[in-house]
Length: 126
Image (cartoon, rainbow, N blue to C red; front, side, top):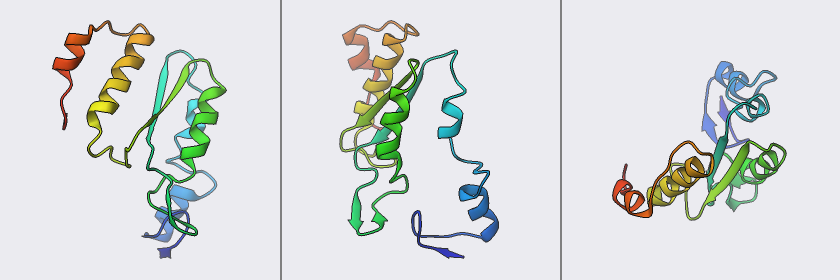
């Protein structure tokens, strides 16, 4: 099955229904609302969702770029971060992503980290 929406891909009909059908096995957004006992950080690269031509997003999660910040704003325990210049795999911006995660963990009271530890403990490609 050659699919054009939500993103062009070659996929079996069974996997398409599993991924995008009425029971969407991989839709993480429907599970965020059920998490209320712990802090949650949702990140997305800022390049996610950029249209390269009408109807074709540069990356797979084109709707998430607008949906996730709104989702995060509806729950006190959910935080959202857009990682500047990040693509779907955060290539070239892993230090920015790591810094955001460490900051989130510090704000949540999960870890305590001074700036020197942060600089020494985060390196590109980790």
